[in-house]
Amino acid sequence: MINRRRILMGGLGLLAATLLPARAGRAEGEKRTELVILTWSDYLDPEVVKAFEARHPITVRQVHFDSDQARDQQVVRKGSDAFDIMVVNAINLASYAHQKWLTPLDKGRLANFTQLDPQWLAEAESGGRLLGLPYFWGNLGLAYREDLVHAPPTSWMDFFRPAEPLRGHLNAIATNRELVGLALKALGHSVNTEDPAHLAEAEALLIQQKPHVTSYPYIDIGKESPLITGEIKLAIVYNGDALKLREFDPRIRYVSPREGGAMWTDFLAMGTNPARREATHAFLDFLNEPAMASKNAQFLHYATPNRGALAMADPAYLADPIVFPPEEVLRKSETIRPVAPRTQRKINEIMARLQR
Image (cartoon, rainbow, N blue to C red; front, top):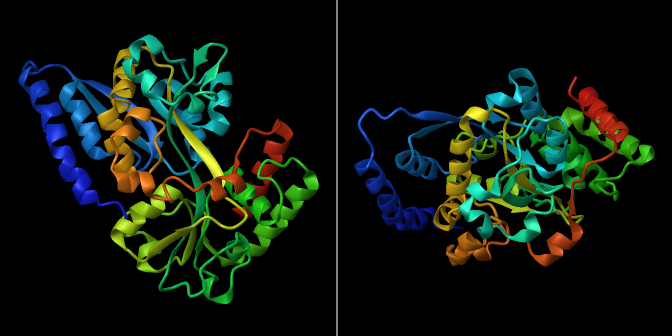
């Protein structure tokens, strides 16, 4: 496990060097700009945010969501001009651009753009426009308390057709494509299949499992998480969150089932309010300074696409097979891709029936 104390202590000198000159040079009573970020909970290192606020006359305010659908609903309800930065996954990035919910970024304002590995930029660029910056990538698997699960899971079917001791102690995930996709994976189908018969099979499996599921919203990853208290014994989680939970309880384990997981990439996209574009670019560029990107990634236990950050990261982080899945896991896993509108409607209907 990553030694968080060593990482944080090692970062104190960096933070001191970052914070003190900014404070010394700032005028008393300087007016501050508020930057609003729509993001998952606990998806930014608080110390990195503090370092940015110390260097710039900008205050960061975070608005949280717990599923893709919840994020989309916030954008529809409040408007895309209510958020300066939005965490958008690869499945939805092009759709956000089509809906005119984001503003292309200006590479000329991003000095650290060159730090990003080009392999992660293919989905971020469209028609010469930069729709977002790759933030993190990873996969979905299963987390469990090793002292409460005496037969460790090896297959997605261990979750979707749980043994008696696990029934009533499962936490799923409310993101439509991911939950339906993993049910498809358990049945031996692609997470991206558009075959109506395969989708019907996945729905039947999910309906059969429903009585055994405690909760569909994504599991809390704080110290009071039900996975730590023991209320939940088995949960679908993002790989980095499993390591975050292990910080609170070393008995937490994570596995990528033998069928392979679902791969994802998150991007940082800019909203449509023109008033704070300078502040938005400043924050995005700050996050991609190698030292800051490295600190943020190691705090969150997620794989960064920032090459400079990887070059200076702790060897324990780089060698962690949960953060960076081995080739065998990657080979079996699939990236969730956009599907035809009729297929997406079918998936949405499955989830709506499931959560009635």
